[in-house]
Image 1: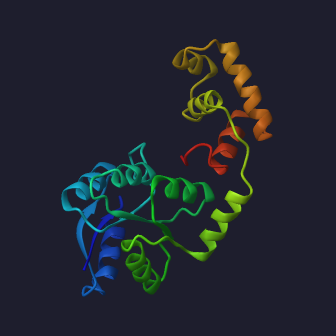
Image 2: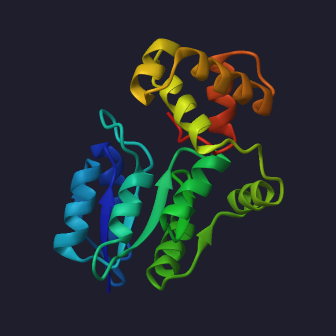
Image 3: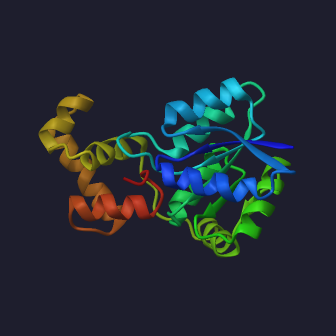
Length: 210
């Protein structure tokens, strides 16, 4: 019997997944439901399921399913994690896999494919829908631009809405140095504005999704 925790911030989604999984009650059972990142990690620790079905975004929390996945996979006797989400960006897939997820499915996956993915992921196998696997392979074969650690720090602060002066204060830099870093970022990402830089960095997987 595969023991599962369903982690999603929408109660109706958790109920729908439970109903689908209950149709295979002789093979799998939901032992817990989590609505937040903290609950996902705590239930994984307390219940020791075989697999966690993890959404990528949790409303009202700056952390994501990637953060939860990383925390769950560091637990003693860590369960496997299968991401089940609406978001199919290649950066989202890559971040989830890097965090330790065994697979990545979209919420419109047919029930038969979901059941098969649960069985495979619970065995530790990698599960990716064909279209998502293609996106991931393309991303690996055609890596995007790279930024230095300091340039990433500056851009991450900009992504949070900080002005150059606020970034300088937070990172203990001069405002001129912040501007210099942003000039380099704009050049590497081939953009002309702060907003475009943030969007390009997220699309390239350099920054997490908003």
